[in-house]
Image 1: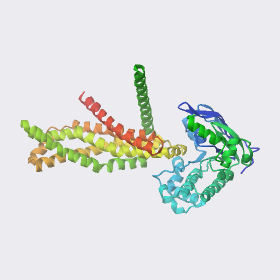
Image 2 (image 1 turned 90 degrees about the vertical axis):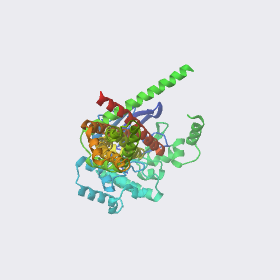
Image 3 (image 1 turned 135 degrees about the vertical axis):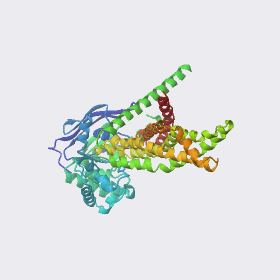
Image 4 (image 1 turned 90 degrees about the horizontal axis):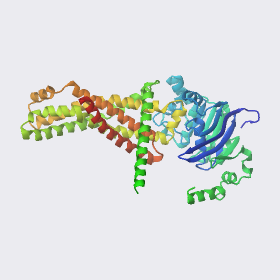
Length: 267
Length: 258
């Protein structure tokens, strides 16, 4: 999506580690995401993708390591500093995480109304504009999340993420649970939104077709380490068996052997 | 064998202390965010409607029949030593000081404690709480504070209405079943009733309301993953709120008598 040669680091994750109940999930994760870049993290279930994202958002504090955003250390920062930092983030969660008790327009303009006391009429108008841009009918703004299909909920989640024009967008499994056509539509909306906002994007995905459509650069996590990172075009020729198996979705290979071994030994 | 037994006791004690610490931290943080602005008045209004208004039928029916049973039981018992004329006093004091707040508390714990734990637990497992956090909103302030405030404010009103209905239940049975004189029964009801009796009941109700909301929010907020986690959180919320209500009932009563 963008040239990465001259851009400065927007997000710099250095050597973060995190254990839960003595079990290490992240052992040594380092990633550098440049301004305006669209970055994807791939990896098998339980490899630490979501934990990395939660560390970035400050929802989980890493045991060690550093996370810089625009050169500012965010690990161990004060509550106020974190709240200010989060204002530049827009995030979509795997299952939408729309607020069930609020209509769509309130979901979309939630942060704007909390932080700017935007009038109701203006918020409704803004929500209607955004949903139309994302290919939904304006009338959906008065519906509740439970009344929408999975694809529509993903679009609303994207609308909520971009409503106050953040400069960092995070997507957790944006196409999971969607049919390939709807998944493709969501991907194109993500690409367009990131480009229009000039934002930096970090996406977690298992869907390799989706990764190829939205990513500039890809990192694969395995057993708490980054085992490969590089341009999306190089993903097919890394020479690393684990990456090869994951990218091509082969049923047999080192990842399967490890899973079988883990199931047998509990390690 | 003895060492293993001691180890188990030690582990259980540490686990218990850890839970006490976790609940205490949650309570202090929740109270702090209840006091600090911004205040989510719409959330507060919604919770007050849910706790105060929609719990009325349950509390009303419970106290009505409890007052009726109390009149029947005390009449049967007191008739054995010719003290039937104390029925009205027994009904009004029992209902205002004990039965009203405790029964209302237990019924609301079942209705509201469970619904709070289920709602917040579902929000936890569907990442809505994390979403709140990333949308510049403190979950404790947005979700927990309005519920704590609504529980503490609404339960005294519910109990006050429940007291009136419970006493009325006793009146109905005494007049139409046991043949008491209407005027005399009302006079006896008011004769020994003091403001402190009602105040004691209302103080208890406020404490119970706080505990119900706290347990509902705490267990929902720390809900485990999946439907099983939310189910367990709901059960724990109701059980812990009910037990705490009974413990607090003794402590508040002892404090007033002390």
